[in-house]
Length: 193
Image 1 (cartoon, rainbow, N blue to C red):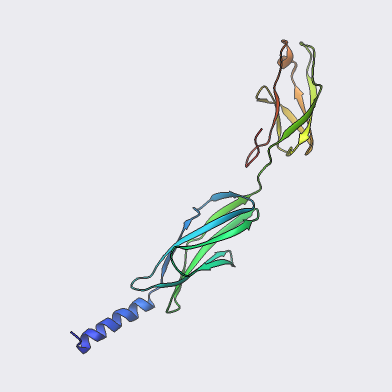
Image 2 (tube, rainbow, N blue to C red):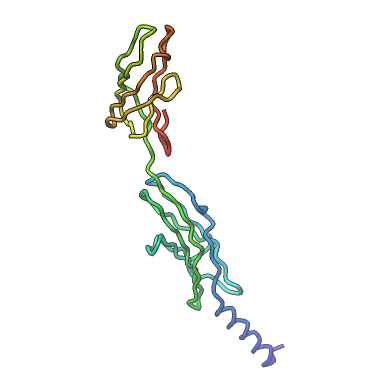
């Protein structure tokens, strides 16, 4: 039926859909996600418009535009992200120029600790029954929170620089003859033995 009343209702429905704001939410990454520094982070949003079409979704870090997507799936990739804490938002707009902003998503991008490598220990041998002594460990990629481990147990460790650590080895650990495994552990993120 093409009566004036039906046309008026259709126009009213179209007009009210154009005047409604879009709905938008970031679906990835999840709130409080953690990434290593230098990551390429995909950011995805779900955006809808009641009875209409989304014209664009813009993605922001704080007030800085990361990128835009003009069609579903609404996604951009933020490349080579430096270490820091960030708030991400998505802004969806429709063809009437109305927009809405998502709830912020917080992410952290952290510097990763390297894996340490030992090149030398001093002393490299002792007589059993020795008293407490200081072990010097040399190598690469030591961080200031590194721990020297003796047969897997952490020792009191002093950091000098990225290539030198010392640790106090209690005499109780060298009472009996045998071999000991000496390792250096860098804590996370990253790190390892």
